[in-house]
Image (cartoon, rainbow, N blue to C red; front, side, top):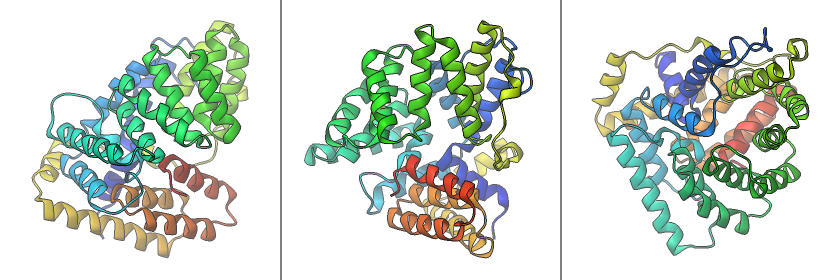
Length: 354
């Protein structure tokens, strides 16, 4: 069994766990403990452009070796249009780096495949997501537009399209973007991103109390360690400050794992060592990591976070069918844990595992 930090590293590549830490650290300086002092003024607001830059900074914390594996597996195995959204996450824009070129190559391959199969709605959705996560919202608009046309019943396609339009518009939610966010909410009422941006539109149109109320509901419904809780906390702090209200007694952290808060920090030596591994060594390392996680879950199945990590890891490796099987197993073993099933289902929706 490999050390726990290696398993966490793999899940970080797939899930953006280190990005979560970066968001939390950044927003703590902005929100200043929103859950205890929500009325405090937020000095830095996480607009879309800043969020994309923050993602780029977080990318530099990842091992180039594991990133290369994520990219390689995403293109070498048989899966639906792509290995899943999170397999693209390490490729956000940033300083010149070999990993960026790898991600660009992957995007080019997906583009070529879509030229051969222009009716692949899921492929266009993935391409739009890839552009959005590499800080290219202008390029994301057209693929998402095609995705919503080909997949009118896919909430994630509508939400992604709305996010691309919003990022293009300097964070302002346009009428067209709002229309797609509302369509996503109609399809899937649990789509938290759609609900967030609908409330953002209310806030921008002066309906600040209505927006604040919805954001508080979202904060209470979302796990405390969810990657975007920090962003939400900053918005709540800002709105509460502007309305001169204290809503701390209305915020209740949802029970969930705190794995991210205790994740060890990777030092430069660790990152450098990983980057020196050969391709064969990288592949062997990932095989051991994923199988080790699977074995641990077979011994301790009441672990929603672990199942979420495993499903994400399968998608990083391009093992869509296995991810589907793992999802079914997780739902079965967690049948008496409704919160756990909800957590795993949220991961599956995020990754496009059905």
